[in-house]
Length: 377
Image (cartoon, rainbow, N blue to C red):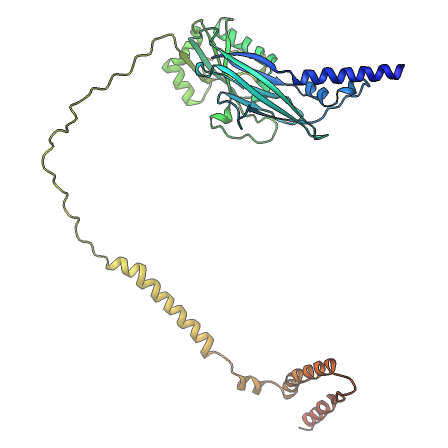
């Protein structure tokens, strides 16, 4: 009975897991505000092997996430995905615009790198109209952060608290987050202490503080250009890695009406008379003989001299066969001339029948006779 109860419990867990897998995840994303959805590896780990929960077995498998819009090869233009490592969580983030309103179905494919199992899930993002108008927006640059480290909700709260002290209001919302690499920044070295950098944009319905408005003064801009310490830097950071670069802060005041571009005036369509055409004078004559000498004659003369030197070395300074034989001893010449004959004789003996082949000639007898003749001289 106990075994039957365990099997029933296991089947129930599998059925519940299967139903949970098939259900879509529905979330809302208002236009003009940052949307972040974290893909937790722990949740998908239980989906691959749900029966292991019953027996107390847990794995920490590496997983890779692949995301795309349903029936499309890529994500929507306003949505981005990042995952630093297969042991880290993935993040879908971006800021939808008013023209992006509608229903976005995102397909999430999870690949288990240990068992090579795959899992598919659907995320439905309903992009609605803007909930809050934020005419005052500011962008800050955090040098010692990476995009995957600022997307978790806890880190966003830390950054928001620091900006609230600087702005002087708690009515702040994140508008956008962008990695410095997407802005043309350089890829950092894979060493401790090197970071990509993140641009964080926040908005509010409250105006900027007096401290933030000092950024637009000429004195502050001159101090930022010189690269020294800025006297008007009033930013604070409870965590040192969340400190912003004061000189890279940009303010946008959207509360002021933007003047419309002037309407172009429509003319008659007939060009005004500009007088008769006066062609330019012909350029003065130029002597091309020096250029011809430098580019053609001089290289040709150098090539001819080199050919003559090479011909003299190859033809006029050869030793010659007669002169070489005169300087070579007769015994050495005899050795040289008999090498080919002996090689031919060995080939003939190896290729023919031993019974029909003549016995080898005595090669040493002529050699001894030649040595005796040389000694008699």
